[in-house]
Length: 470
Ligand code: ARG
Image (cartoon, rainbow, N blue to C red; front, side):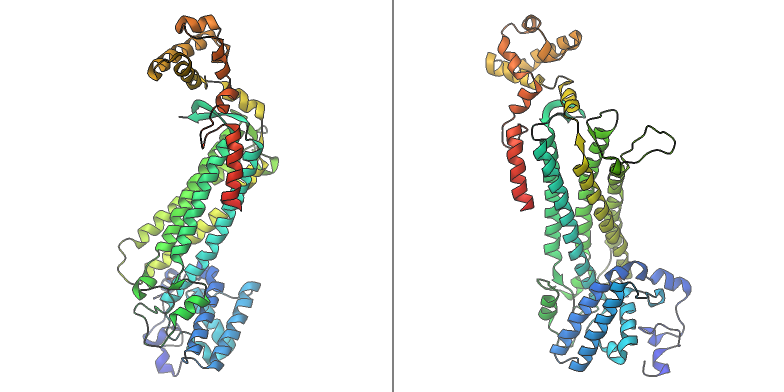
C-alpha cells in the first residue's frame, strides 16, 4: 500500500482492494472464504513459496536480502502452523492470503515481493498437487498394511475350508485363505491406481501464473526440481485450470471404497449370529442400548457405509468441473472439500478394516460345517462321471441333478447317499466316487493356477508377500 488512494477504502481487502470503492459484504466474504478447509494446505503452501522465492533470487528478480527475509519469515510462519498457534482469519479468504499477510506482519515490505511472477492460480494448483502427493503416499501405505493383515490371515487359513458362493448360495468349497487373497488382489490394484495417478500429477504448475505465464525470467525447471516434481507442466492454461489429478484420486478412492465395502459386508455376514463363522474382538464391536444380547459390527457397517461418501465426492467434483471454460474459475475452489473428505474417509476406513482383519477369529468347524451344506461337491460328482464313465458333461450334469434331488429327499449330503441309491440313477457309479465327494477332496483338487487348493493358496500367499510387501 503506497498511498490511501491506491489501496481503496481502509476496510477493502489489502491483497486486491486497489480498485474497490467498498469492502465485500458479509455474504460475499462468507461464500468466498475457503480458509476453514484449505488451511490444511498451509505447510505445502509455504514449501511452494520458499521454492518460488529462492528461484526468483537465483534469477536476479529478487534481492538476496529479500529472499533471506522471506525464507526466514516463512520458516517462522511454518513453525506457528506446526505448533497450532497460527491464527487463520476468514476475512483473508484463503490459506494463501493468510500466510502472506502473516509474513508481511513478520518481515514487512519484502513479503509483498514474494508474489512476483506468480498468481494464486498456479499457487493453489501447486499446493493441491503437493498435498495430494503426500496423501496418496499415506493412503497407499495404509492399503499395504491392510494387505499385510489379509496375507497373514490367509497364511493361517490356507487350508481352512469355507463355502464358496455364487448368488450368495453355496457353489463350491474354497478356503478362507483363498477368499482373503482375492481382496489382496483388489487392494493391490487400488494401490496401482493411486500410484498411476501420482505419477501423472507430478508436474509443477508454478510459473504458469494466472493463466498465460509471466514476463519475468523465471526458471520453471528449478522450482519443479526443488519441489520434487518430475518436470514443469507444459501448458500454463492447463496447469492452472484442470483438476483431473483430484478426479483420479477420487475415482481411485471410490473404487477402493467399493472394495472396502464388499469386505465389510462379508465381515458383517461372517460375524453375525445367523452365520457365526467368525468373531470380531470386543474392542471392535459395540453393544445396543436396549438389547443386551447384541454385539454389533458397527465398524464394519461404517466402512461399508463410507463407500457412499467416497462415491459422492467423485460425483461432486466431476459435476463441478464439467463445462468449466478455461482457465481458472472460482468454482475450482470446490475441489477441496471432496478431496479432503475422501482422504480422511480412506484414512479412517482402511485402518478400521485392517484392525478387523487382524482381530478376526475364525471358527474352522463352523466354516467346514457350512461348507458341506447345499451339495457343494455336485460339480465334483459331475466331473467324476465325465472322467470315470466317459459321460458328456451335459449328461453328467443332468444325472447329478437327479442325484442331488435324491439326496435332498433322503435328507443327506451327496457323500452320504448310499451306493445303490446312486446306481439307480447312474448304474456305472462305483465306490471310488466317494473319493471326490468330501469338501476337503473337492477343494484339494482345485490345483489350477490361481485356484483354491490349500497348497496353491499357501504358494499364492508367499507370492503375494513378495509382490505386495517386499
Ligand atoms: N482459494 C482459491 C482456490 O482454492 C485460490 C485461487 C484463487 N484464485 C483467484 N483467481 N481468485 O481456488
